[in-house]
Amino acid sequence: MNKLAQPASSATCLPQELRKAIVIVGSPRSGTTMLGRTLAHHSQVALLGEPRMTWRYGNDRKSDRLTAADARPEVVNYIRGRFAEHVRAHGKPRLLEKSPQNAIRLDFVERVLPGCKIIHTIRHGVQSALAIQSFWKNKSTGVTTIPRDKVGRRLREVGLRRLPYYGREVARRLLGSAFPGWVAPNIWGTRIPGIDELVKDLDLIEVCALQWRMSVEAARHHGQGLPPDRYMEYRLEDISPELIERVLAFCELEPEQAVMDYLRAHYDPARQNRRIDEADPRDVERIRQWIEPTLHWLGYE
Image 1 (tube, rainbow, N blue to C red):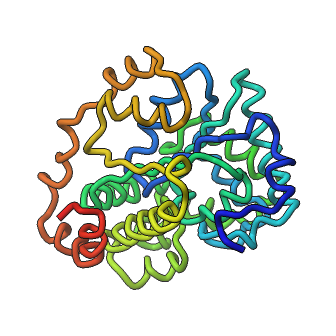
Image 2 (tube, rainbow, N blue to C red):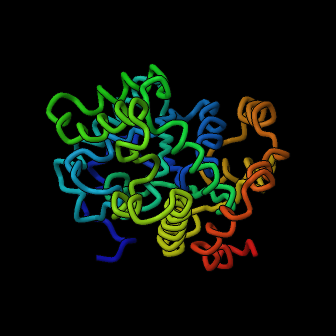
């Protein structure tokens, strides 16, 4: 079936709260959080930030690369039910969902949220890979690196029946901080296919480069096959009040002062080149070896 077509029942069964949902995607550390928090100040949307375990319901054994075939009826109904419940609890009419992992499974996402509006935030690959590496090193092990509210949310998402699937992940996080170098690193960010083997075979910075590349290429390839009122992409480096106005228009949302005030207070464009300016040139070169063609495709070089 063409990806633009949806089963006849998919849209008619969609709860009102999930119609024209706004879905923000991108590689890890590309600005999805910043955009999500900015748009969350709009009176018409309820932000649901990275409900990772909800998206993986029924597909726990797989990587984050899910397809339309993985969107079985029981899976779709479960995810829709959780999302609609979240929107109702916040008293807003529309869902705003932000998960970087969705960049590599948009066929699956469209089965769950047919008609959704997809916003793809793109950051220069070298900058993103360096930032991803930093989070792998500083956020992937230990429990103190997880915000307390996020721990509770993850436990509620997983539930008792699904805990065995994530035992290894929990063990890596706990033991990795206690026995560094003896325990395989806990995976951080988008679980691209084969990432466990990639971590063994490549340097970490190269794995981070591949996380960026696969995320950007998959999302852009999917988006280019959609009508212009369904897919929008922008570069993090181009963020401005004028661009946010275009984002709001794409989402069919009226401009609101609270959105612009948040952007002006929390976004500093001068920080965008900090990582690459401070990076080891050897790391920059290794990143480029993996992502140079994608940079050219995006028009960065």
